[in-house]
Length: 298
View 1: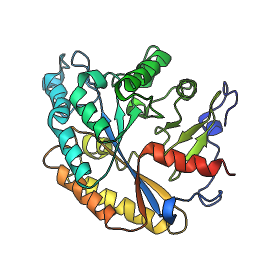
View 2 (view 1 turned 45 degrees about the vertical axis):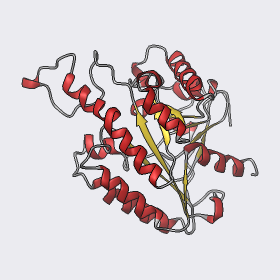
View 3 (view 1 turned 30 degrees about the vertical axis):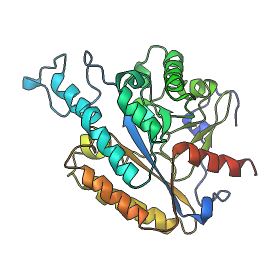
């Protein structure tokens, strides 16, 4: 789906279509729910302000380098990521790896482990900086795609902007660069098409609710909130999926859910989901292909 979008608003790009009033979307084996996990790996630059903080500056005076908060994130890459790898591998699961392009150089061992585990690599900006603060988005997108292609041998098909940020040009630039799906548009329980000025684009359902940034870093919930909220989310989608199949995303970051006091609750969430029949564990690209195969037949 493509057209000139110089004047398209967000509503124009994704016209309103209730989930109860659209052509049927089906999952393999007549499954009720497709679940995908997004592991976010980011490059936080020590010499700049941190994207998020766990400690406020002493006496309210910001300082650089912000060693404490940079180390908070760095722990995730040195330790927490490897807990994720262990949890997923023990259950035979693969993640979608939302990775900053520059992280392929900064965190080689982690990126190599994700690639060897068969995870799908998805673009997540070149460094962890919101798209509206990037001087040249087209260059940053191309650098990210090139870094992932150089590391894995193939370009990413999907994209998640840092902080889910976009400007009015971001979608068009992504489509022109060959990106096929985005996770930024958190507005549905099924994939939907998005209009751009060139190639087609699909929104694969992502989440700001079953997302440890919101749960742990923004809302400051107790350690078990990812399990409790994720279980309730899954149970409702599973019930509804008997008539209208759904997609559930689980978004996690090594420095948040990868810490010792939270990791058990991620394990508990997966074990709850895997105890149900009629569930397919997917990557983002696999969900895209399921959707597109049906859209092409319409």
